[in-house]
Image (cartoon, rainbow, N blue to C red; front, side, top):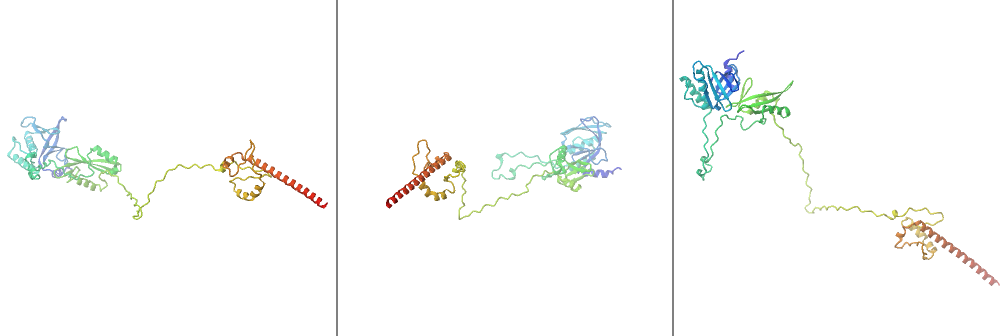
Length: 434
C-alpha cells in the first residue's frame, strides 16, 4: 500500500525539522564509485537530503552544504545533454548529475545560495525563479543570521586606566555556533565518548550498571543511543540515530520523534520501555557503618591523675639450692643405736629439750683428735655447714662408738667404786666390833 505524498512530506518535515526550499530527482556518485545512483533530493535549510525514492520518509544520506568549498561544471552547457557538477566539501568530493541543463542550473542556484548566503551573479534562470531564490535567501538569513567577526583585542596602551571594567575594554563575546548544541550544559550521566563497539562491550561486561548509553555518532554534530534489550532468546544490542537539528534532536524510528534535548531522548526511551531499562552509570563504593570514637576518660580537676610509670624489665632471679637439696637422703639407724638429729629436722628442738641435761652429763670433756681423725664439729662452729657436706654416716658411727666407750668406762668405774666402798664399810664394821 503506497503512502500519500502529503504524509511522506509531513514525516520528512518532522524528521529534519527544516524548511523545504527545493526538491527533485538526481544522480549522485562518490570518487570511489564507478556509476551514478538514482536519488530523490531535497534542499532543507543548508543541507541536501538524499532519499532512495519519492516514497521514502527517512533519508539515506545527507550533505552539509555549509562545508562546500567549490562547485564546478564538468560538462559545457548544452541543451538536451546531462549536466554534471562536482561538489568539493571539506571531507569528500561528490558528483551530482541532472538529466537536462535547465534543471541543473536550478540546482546550482539553490545550492550556492544556501551555501554562500548570497545569490550567484551569473545564473541563467527566469525572473520567477530568481524571486524564489530571493525568498530562500531571506528565510535562510532569518534562520541563521550572519555573525559579526570578532574584533582583535585592544592594545593595552589604549585601554582607559580609570575604568578597567568599562564595556569598551571588555573582550568581545564569542560568535554563536553555526550548529548549536541542544544538549545543553547538563549532559545525561549515561553519556560516554565511546564508539559503538566500545559501548556494546561496556553493556555486555557490566549489565548491572545499566542498559542505555548515549554516545557521539560517526556523523558530525550528531549522536547515537546504544541499548541492551533482554529477549527470551537472549540479550540483543540495538543502536538508534539521533539527528541534531536547530530545534532539538530527531530520533530515527519508523515514526520519527523530535525532542528538545538529550535528556528528553533518554526520558523517551525510559517511558517506552516502561522503565525496564536504566541509564548506564558506574556505581561508586560507599561505606555503610559509622565508626563511633571512644568516649574520653573523665579527669578530675581537683586531684591530678596519677601518672602510670613504666614497668622495669628485670631478669628472673635464680633460686639458690637449700640445705635439704644439698644433704644426702637420711639413713635408717640400726637397732640400739642413737640418732643424731639435724638442724633442719622438725623434732630437733623437742628432742634437745628432753635429752640435753643427760647428754651434757654423760658427754666427756672435749678431746683433741689425733692426726688422721675427723673432728666432730660443734653446732656453733662457723665451718659446721661446710663440714656437714662430708659423709655423715661415718661420723655418726664414730660418735656413737665414743659415747658407748665413755658410758661403759663410767659404768665400770662406778661399779668399782661401789665395790670399794662396800669393802671399806665391812672392814670398818669389823674393827668396831672388835
